[in-house]
Amino acid sequence: MGILEKIAEIEREISRTQKNKATEYHLGLLKAKLAKYRAQLLEPSKNAGAKGEGFDVMKSGDARVALIGFPSVGKSTFLSLMTATESEAASYEFTTLTCIPGVISYKGANIQLLDLPGIIEGAAQGKGRGRQVIAVARTADVVIMMLDATKGDVQRGLLEKELESVGIRLNAAKPNIYFKPKKGGGLSFNSTLPLTQCSEKLVQLILHEYKIFNAEVLFREDCTPDEFIDVIVGNRVYMPCLYVYNKVDQISIEEVDRLARRDHSVVISCGMSLNLDYLLEELWEYLALICLYTKKRGERPDFSDPIIMRRGASVEHACHRIHRTLAGQFKYALVWGTSTKYSPQRVGLTHIMEHEDVIQIVKK
Image 1 (spheres, helix red, strand yellow):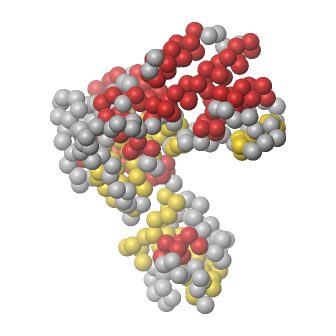
Image 2: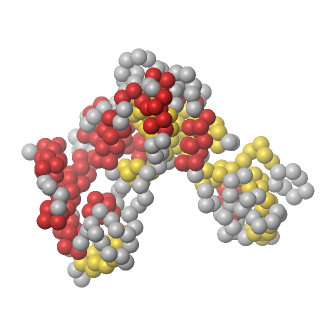
Image 3: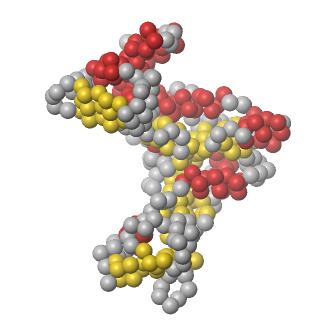
């Protein structure tokens, strides 16, 4: 029996099993086995065939966004509208066969946008170059999931399932579980709050499935067995995702209203260029980028060339971004903007910067 057959058998067993107190250990074990087989499926085969056309694109710009979706939902049209890159668009499926990069210039930042080939059902098992598409998506900062508004919620569920099976967790935070394998001493299990979904026995069974008999486990939140398995495997990617419903000009206004009110969702029409500016604003928020402006002593700030940083960046990060030796010669900085109590405020290296702050660095 191959790995795909084993996965299908376990999925059937899970769907057949009733969820109650008596079966939780059995279900936990099945989920651990399923995660193990899926991990084996993602490993590259030893006897790989002849190399095809290159798929990976070098990372450039301040952030990377991947466009994922089924064939013919408007990904290539969206790339052509938002960037200077022309991606071939036609009325037949699989027009795009490789990864096409483009650059969005927004608020002084260069955001790399990747137009990936359409995903089909079973992509996680390698159908239709699905593995390469998903591997590139794992390297992105944000995923834009392009959906056809005329197809309802079917596409969203199928794509989430495909990404879930290869370890991409969309709009989810990393589980707050401390896990450390040890050389000996058995299992040390603790929790800082009452657990309703996991017990010590279940944790022990899951660890035994991974041949781990000595470990330290501390639950800091009430997590599910699936989340605990993610922590053990350790190769999961947690990333923000924006669900973009295209072709809203072909559906009723009530349906548009329903889709727009869903969490993490934006409705657009590439054909009529509707709502694209709002999508860019949302994308900026999801990327968590900020602009900083520099100022020389006795001169006006330079608003033409901002420094693009991640939200939560400190003065020290800004120094490293300007020049790697600047932090060593740093004496103090003067900052104007919303991060200060008064302008200008004299600050040190640990001061956290905010969007559109102006900074003047004084050296020793």
